[in-house]
Length: 123
Image (tube, rainbow, N blue to C red; front, side, top):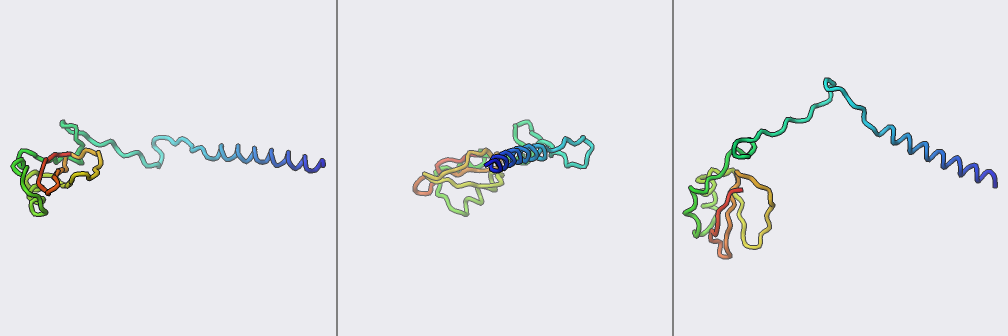
């Protein structure tokens, strides 16, 4: 019976030692600034309008407002993209889900049930 107790104590002490060793080894050393470790990338630059350089080109709704109320098809999607200067076009029909990320270079074409252009928005 005494050997079972000793074995249990030995197992408990070994488990604690193992856990402590794992905690010590998992900590990363702090490296000096001039080390060979890659630095974090610089933050994005932001223009006067609040958009980053990545999205510097924005769409121009004034140039395409006349399309509201017109039927939508793939041919005028390309024309709307070209006239607005948008980099992307996203077509949204009633009930479509859309991400909430704001992209100033994206034209959102909102359609009604008959694929008529109901609204145009950038973002």
